[in-house]
Structures are given as structure tokens and as C-alpha cells.
Image (tube, rainbow over all chains, first blue to last red; front, top):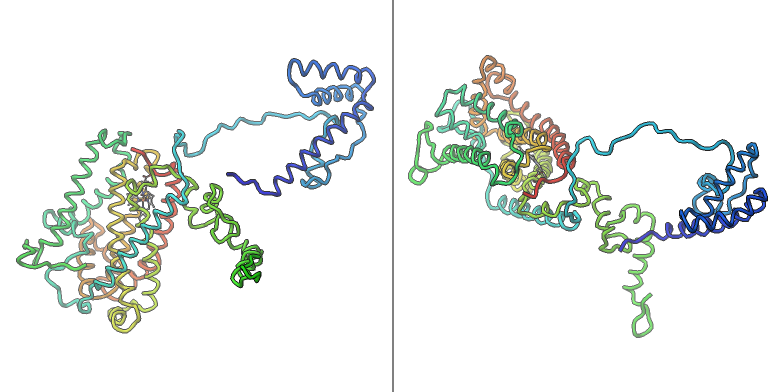
Length: 270
Length: 260
Ligand code: HEM
């Protein structure tokens, strides 16, 4: 299922081979370098490690060698050329790779500088979720949606021409004069309220209220059954708005007077 | 190379082989078609390639590699946000074509629109797509807002994206309205007169607001130039910025809301 690229496989194979051979080498070197009593003790330690802690023998040996090196007064064993020098990872990496049993220089220490808490700036609760690949599951659906919209729009545009009336003439006011359909609700409000209220204050309050909705609605539930008030209120506004707009489109004639579209005609253009 | 029954190489196979080895295997091809591309040599429908498709495409990269299972259902988003965005792109493309043929002066504007219908190949089609597409986009943005409301998707952590959305709605309306004036026919002139008269009722600053909108006391050449600049340059520019924030926030807020 998951294909691991060939060059990575090769590199890891080489690295594993190199580690093995260098480990053997080190063990051999140990025998020579270490003081006699140490080397006689080593097999015993190895045996006890196997029976109890499961600490790999070469690690135990390394720590012992380090201790011995310290008591020797820092007489570092001669640097040994790593066998894996050419093993794919490049020179820098291989020389940095800690080869076992080489306690050269002072012991490395680490300091705790800070504890960084996990989490992001925008914390979202992460429960395990059921996910699918965007391709093909989402992209294919989007593609179909785009095709359908394009087909509909091109087809409609071939069949129906956009309106183009006579050239603009400031001296001849058509009757009625209507705003574009998305502002017809506002124009309709003008017939009910004072112009300042209908034209400025109500739309201002509407937009501000819409933007503030997340802060007004303190209910955290998203299930429709648990937020009936919010959805009913919103639906009422939507219906009110739709009624105003449709009235503006179909039921307003000359002088913004009420007309019946089926008997008097439609005074509207997109 | 494959051989047919007569022991002769088939020309087609030979060509196919050169295509895969020399062209598809070449440096140029592999540098253009990154992993995940169906044109790449050895493409297979594997989970790895499915991820690469998204990761290695600047456009698809708007999406994460994986999305919630319920979110890909058309019945959840109704594709309304995506369709609004697609219409915006379509309007940008058709709008650029219209710009080639349109001069925003009171003397020329109307005739330029007329000549789209009478003289320019596909002029009427492009204009129709632009106009009907604009109406459709206004409508889908309204519906998208309603869908978001009914899913309670404006609730934490998505409050801010709802506000960004409200700005997008206003920008959409402004784009539609500024475009409405440009044909410079009776419909445009008087619709805009009605609209701007309403804003003239702003308390205290009414006449100033109207003057800033119109560029003069009455609708005229100044208004046309001003609204044209807003329509083709400034509003789309601002729109793109807010769209970027909008899409980015959808992902930062943990993807699509729900399931309900
Ligand atoms: C130009 C107009 C807009 C475009 C192109 C747009 C695009 C999108 C897209 C593509 C999504 C992803 C989910 C989906 O497709 O439904 C989305 C989500 C969202 N939109 Fe919009 N949007 C627009 C306007 C609005 C408006 C007017 C609002 C609200 C006032 C809004 C609020 C949101 C919110 C809150 C989400 C997250 C929804 C969720 O997580 O379920 N957007 N938008």
C-alpha cells in the first residue's frame, strides 16, 4: 500500500549494515583498550543485563568505558574511522553519528530551557473524526457542481438576453423606477416607514445585527431541535424579506402603487 | 518493445515506448507533472497519490488532504459557498473580456454595450453570462448565508468567519450594484438614482454621503467613472483579500462545521 521510495530503502539497508559492522568493530576495540579487569568483568555484566534489565550489552559497555576513561584522566582513545563513512548519509552526518565507546571530551549535558505546552493558537477540540480523501471524494463532486452551474448559466445566457433599455436620459423618469431586486426590500420599506428609518437606520441595524449574531446567540447547541428560537426568528426575517422583495418585483406598478401582475403586467427588469 | 504476430514491431507500440521512456521519464516532464499528476509516469490510484493530488496543486491546496466524511456530502453545504466562489471567478473572466469593449464615459458606454450585441463575436453571450452570473451569485451568497445560519456554523470558533462572511455579502451587493450602472441605459440610471437617494437620507451627513457616492450632485460622467473603477478594480481587490481570509479561516476553525 505505502510505497517507500527505492533510494530510501537502499539508504536504510546500508545504514543498518554499517551499524552492525561498526558495532562488531567497537566490541573488538574494547577488548584491547579497556583495562584488564574490566574486560574480564564484561561478559558477566552482559549476562546480568540480559537476565534483568534488558539493557543492550554495548550500551553497558560504553558507560563502563566512559567511567574508565574519566578515571584515566581524560585520555581519550584515538578517534576511530567509522566504517560507514560512505554509507549514503554523507560525510558530515556519518562523522556526527555517535560511534559506541568513544568518550572523548567532557560529558555532554542538557539543560531544560522551557516547557512548551502543546496546542495551537486557535484551539479546536479534536476528537477523532471520520475523514475521507479530498481527492477524489470532494473534488469530483465540486467538479460536477461547477459543470452543472456552467451548463445552466451558458444555456440560460444563450436563451435569454440581458436587458438593455433606451440610453440613459436624466430628463425622462420612467414610472415606476425600481432599485435592483436585492435592494427592492429596502425600497418596499420606504412605503411603510420614514425614508431615514427605511433607507438608513433599518438596513444599518440589520447588518449590525447580522454581524453580531454569534455574540447575541449564546446558545452553543447546533442541533435544530435545540435552537428553535434562533431558527424561527431567522426564518421569520427571511420570509419577511422575501415577501418585501417579491412584492417589489411583482406587485408594484406606476407610482409604486399596488398592482396585480396577472391583470396589470409586471413592471420590473433584471 | 511489443511485437506482433509477424515478429515486426508495431509502430504504435514503438511510439508509445518512446513517449513513456523519453518524454514521460525525462527531466522536463517530471518537473512539470509532480507526484499525484495523472500524466506522471507510473501514476496509480494509491492513497499516497490521492494525497499528492491536493498537496502538489496550488489550486486544490485550498483544501486539506482529508476532510470530514459528512462534509463532502452535497446535502450538507449544498455547494453554495463553492458555487459562489466559482461564479466570482467566472465573473472575473467574463468581466475582463467586457473591459476590452467598454469605455466608461457617458458618451460611449451605452453604445459599447449595444455593439457587444450587434458587432462583437460572442459579445452578447459574454455579457449575458456576466449579467446573469452576477444575479445568480448574489442569490447563492444569500443562500449560503442561510445555510450557515441553519447549521449554527456561526457559533464558536467560527464567529469571526461569520463576520468576514457578512463583509463578503456587502461586497457582493456593492459589486452587483456598481455594475448595474455601467450599461448606462434607463434601467441603470434610475435604479441607481433610487438606490443612492435612499443613502442620501443618512442623518446629518446625507448630502456628503451622496456626493461621495456620485462624485457630483447628480448622476453623470463622474459617477460612471467612479463606479467603474470601484467595480473593476477596487471592490474585486478587496473581495479577493476577504475571500482569502474566509477560506483560511474555514480551515483554521477546524474545517466545515458539524455533523449536526
Ligand atoms: C462571496 C461570498 C462568499 C463565498 C465565495 C464564500 C465561500 C465559502 C466556502 C467555499 C465555504 C466552505 C463551505 C461551503 O461551501 O459552504 C464557506 C464557509 C463559510 N462561510 Fe462563506 N462564502 C461567502 C459568503 C459568506 C457569507 C455572506 C457568510 C455569512 C454571513 C459566510 C459565512 C461562512 C461561514 C461561517 C462558513 C463556515 C461554515 C461551516 O463551517 O459550516 N460566507 N464560505
